[in-house]
Length: 386
Image 1: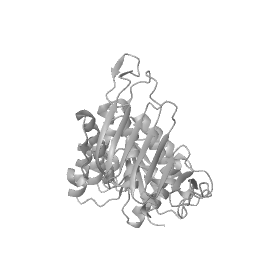
Image 2: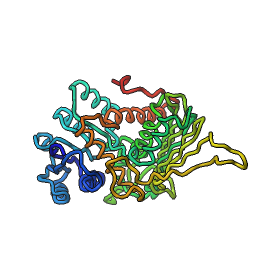
Image 3: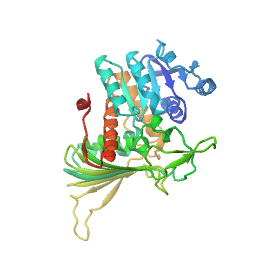
């Protein structure tokens, strides 16, 4: 095993704990580990939450100033787990400090910040490893889907449907939080859920060429947490995006926070000339595949949808627990983090990178512009934006 790397966390709310879970469990899943990790520092907005975070994961110190993390020579890896409006300055400073960076989605508050970060990375010659937490790339079913697409299973791709559906905001009395504050989140369902499903489509089918978006806020105001009144909601509840991809295929991406009856329903269906693939996160152990080349005679022959039991069949060395056992949501986070640490240890380039995150931010920005202008728009590449 290689050297020990010190780790610092900026933010330790829900997603910070998810990232921390990965470090606690990685040695159980992977033998050998690509590197040793030591929990050195944690930064949160208040001293009392910082102290609780330090005790939770046995960090060596805690702080309310992220510069304390970046100034430490014994911290080589930093995690960005804060609300979106706090990403940019921290990430720019982390790049300038030469840290390896693991950033939760979306990359920044908006495309301007994301492109600025990418510009700083290029101008400074930043050589650290950097990865986004787009963990749905790291389920066995989605890994297998990408393999099949790259192997030509679908043939020419005609189009797709992709959705990420939640129902957690259907109660109009759910109070305002940072996720509903445009100044802190940058977008609603589009940024929170749409960033994930847009990235997964990008991973499977490549770049977007143009799009037309319809973003809607159905619940126009919500109560303040202290009960002192109500305030307008400035972000979208539902995002529906009609896309054309660089390969000419067309599709629809949807992100809903008001999908009554849904739990955590990320799903896609891709149709090609030779076959089709479909997946639903609520049934994560299976990738479904349809091969149009199977015989359809007599009486249907053997043609039809087949369920591929991907369950927990990760490539080596991810052999714990047994490959036949059910996979869970948090397992994808563990695999995503493993990929990042492996790339540090092997001097490989992690994907999805922060530049991938900047590209997805450009796609989301184009969707917001399309909604405001009520017309389809070309999606710029990151090189175009730079």
